[in-house]
Length: 596
Ligand code: ADP
Ligand code: MG
Image (tube, rainbow, N blue to C red; front, top):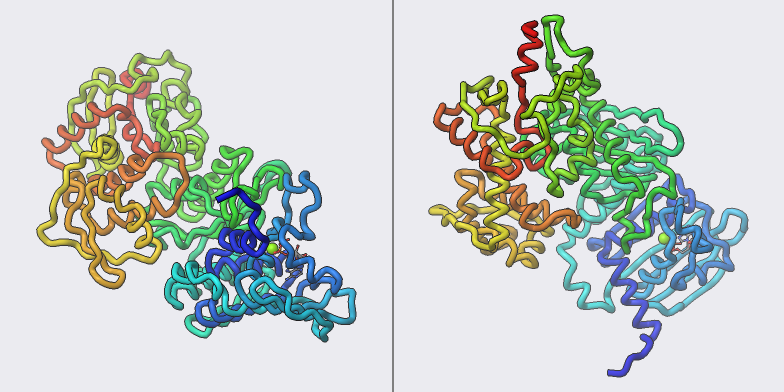
């Protein structure tokens, strides 16, 4: 076929395909338009999961009558003028694509009145064709009704899920904006499913009460805005105490300059702040706002504007982690490490221990260079802390075993402390090994090696496990079947949303097969390309199979674990970048006891 320019009626549908994937995407775009128009009340009516009808009314400024038809043309926008404007976008919309895209694949009726005009406009477009354009009486603001979405795109229609699922996606979109804009009153009236209304008083906690229930709202901890200069990110919002944990990440929202964003690094920064407070594979709830200079964030990186790029990633992740950790520490203090009671202590404890963050005790050698460790480092966990061991803090010469290196000396196991740490002796002093972190490291390296070799040892389950998967996970299982298989999972449909797990990676051992599978699908769902599939899967399987803190270990088991850790390529940190052990050097012990 010769190369030709697509006819506009064709290309407009392609655009629609990108921006408007499903009814919830239309709702999202239209709410963004209302917010950009300065609305303080936005009401959303939905029928048939949005395919039958979506109606959004706002009390924003409205559209001037002579601009209405232009608003429906592709790349027509009032929000961006020059290419320079794209460098510091302050509005939610900027591409001028939503109205043309939606109206190309539905029947749209728009009634609007501009605040400075006495008469409004009624404008109707069917599948991209203008069918009426006339003056109309209307209050200031805009009401847009979208009927029969995707009726002319049967292929897209087929991809839609049930009315219930599509409605719940719309609910998620609306509640996210309600959380981002507590001063705006949102209403959602679906024909099926829960009605929702936010109070619009400006109080975030009241919106959380409307979205997640009163009890959750009352339990959330305040992250007060950090006092910073204008060029630094400001983080504020509400996060749950560790006791209010959840099985997945769907209760975590990030808003950058009030735009909902998805960012794997941000979630990681948040989750890491809870590390040690919360059980593995449990997740906090959180509404985290990040305000930062507009030019430091690129929102033009993704068709749906959900993914953003930061100019100074490290700074943002550090700020998020700091703010969350501060909230946790302020509200639920953790025991401090007592460096010394003898008076021979190094001059002062490090700033970290002053904040009570026990686990920040430095790993005794350089953090690993793996991507995950890099992630941990940007999140502020290991980077720059190498020199904070007691001996260095005191200015003493650095003893040999503290020099950056990855190999462990051969250790002699002494016993278990608090059913959590293994006490061991090495050529230069004493080691306390975190049994969970250490085992996680061991499992991580093994699973990754097997997955990379595409040669997992598969363990058939005598009794297949049943797992229920949400629509997103089902899609992933379908599209990533090969990867899931190459990890050692044998999964087959079992009717409805149920699936049978017949085989698991042997390394998973006794761990919960369903939890491990869901964990991997969760990680896949999040996307983000900073590490390989193998690494991600290994991370999830390691999390599930590693022994827990609190488990009594026999001397034999402790010895085995210590040997396995010695064999690791990067024994000093767990896959999250947290230290697997603390080293008390002979020099340090001698000083503490006043022997030198
Ligand atoms: P974008 O939001 O990227 O500018 P849209 O296609 O979503 O593109 O909207 C096109 C233009 O129509 C907007 O720039 C705005 O001027 C106008 N508009 C759309 N919806 C509304 C609304 N609810 N209230 C006021 N103006 C609106
Ligand atoms: Mg828009």
